[in-house]
Length: 521
Ligand SMILES: Nc1ncnc2c1ncn2[C@@H]1O[C@H](COP(=O)(O)OP(=O)(O)OP(=O)(O)O)[C@@H](O)[C@H]1O
Image 1: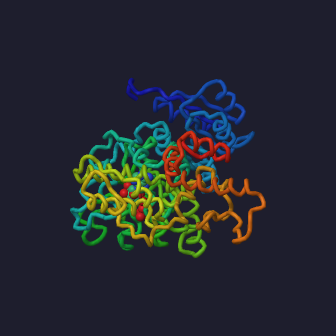
Image 2: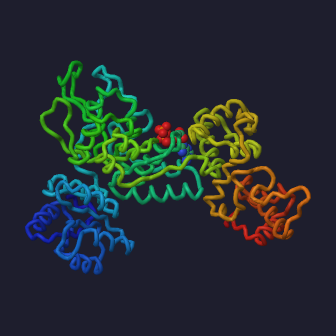
Image 3: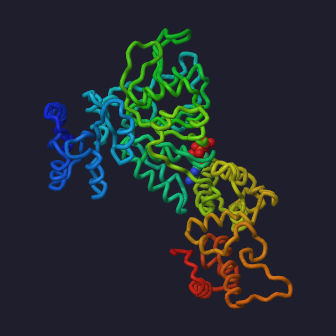
C-alpha cells in the first residue's frame, strides 16, 4: 500500500479464532488497522471506546447476532460501514442484513479475493476488479448492433477513463420539493451508502432512471460506470451474450471476445430497466449471477467474479407478476431488498413549476435558446389542472413543443396546446398536493369528488337555511381559501391577491380557520 493511502480502521467480529486470524492476515496485508472481537458484547465494548471505518461481522455469534451490532450502530447514528458474513445459501440472512443497513454481505466460505474487494468497495477505495478491468472494447465491430438498451448518454463514464471525475448532478437534476419528492431524495441518500439491490417502482415517465442514476452518483461507486439496460428491448436470443459477454468463436459472427453488461459495469452500477420484461429463462441466469457474484461469458469455460450493484426498475406490479408465474419469486426477493416508489406526477402536482423550470432550462440550452422562456401564470394554471398520464416525460414533451410554439420569452397557456377537454378542475392535482402538505385532512369531506359549488357542505334546499350560519360560512370560506392556495402553489400573497385580500388579511383568515399550509407553513 502506498504511504499516501489513508489508513482505514476495521473491527472484525467472529467467534471462530481461526477465521479471525485468516481475516486479520488478509486485511493487515492490505494495510488496514485492525481490532477483533469474538462476541456481540465484546464488539459493542470496542465500538463504545472508539469509531472505525468499517465493521465486518459474522451473522451468528455466541451471545446474539451480527444484526444486533447493526441495530446498535443504527440507533447510535454511527457512520461505520458494515459488512455481514452469512452462511452459504442463506438468502434470508443476506436480505435481512441489507435491509438492516449493512453495506454488503459475504457468504461462507469466504472467497478472500472477493473479501478484499468488498472491503475496499465499502471504504470507497477502487475495487481491484474495476481497476484491473480493461476499457470497454468497441461493441459494434463484431457486426452486431450496438445494443440499444445501453442507451446513449446514460453511461458517460463508459469508455477509457475509469477514474474520470464523476459529477454527482443527478440529485439536482431530480427537481421537486414536494413532500413526496423530498422523501425520494432522502431514500436515495440513504440507500446510496449501501450495496443493497434497489427496486425502483413507478409509472412510465416518472423519473425511475434518474432516480437510479442519482443512487449511483450519490454513492461510493460514483466514479465507476453506470450501465443502463432496457431489458425489454433486447431480443431474447441475444440476452445471455449481452449480459455476460462472449468468447471469440462462441457462435457464428463472434469474431472477438466481447464484454457483457456485467463486465462493463464492474465496480459500478448495473441498472436493469423494465426488469419485468425479462423472460423466465434469463431470470434464472440473472439470479445465479447475483447470488454467485460471478458470470460466465458464452463460450467460456470458467466463471469470472464481478462486483456490480444492481438497481432495477419496473412500471409493472412485480408481485402480481410473481403470482401469475411470469416472474421468479426468488429473483424478486433478491432484487426487492429495498423498494423505492417514484410517485406519479399527478400526486405531486405542486412540483410542476420547478420541474418545468429545470426542464425548460435544459431544453432551451440544448436548442441554443436564450434567455430561457418562462411559463405565464395562466400556463402554470393549466398544467396544474392536467393529470399527466405520461408523467414527467409527457411534461417534457409538452414543453419541447411549447418552446417551439412560443418563440418568445414567455410560454402562455395557448402554446401548451392542451384542449379544455383534458383539463379538469375537480382533480386539480392540487388536491393531492394538499395531501402531501398535510392539509387534506382538514378539508371538508367530499371536496375532491364533488367540485361544483361548496362541495363538502350539506346542500341546502332553496328554502332551507343553515342551522349554524357562522359555522356554515366558515366552511365556505375555508374551502375557498384552500382552493386559492392550491391554485397558487401555497403562495399566500398570490392566493390572497386572487381573492382581493392583502397578505395580512389572508394570513389573518388562515389563522382564524386553522389553515396551516402556506409559505414556510
Ligand atoms: N424530477 C425530475 N426533474 C427533472 N426532470 C425529470 C424528473 N423526473 C423525470 N425527469 C425527466 O423526464 C424524463 C423521463 O424520466 P425517466 O426516463 O427517468 O423516467 P422512467 O420512469 O425511467 O421512464 P420509463 O418507465 O419510460 O423508463 C427524462 O428525460 C428525465 O430527465
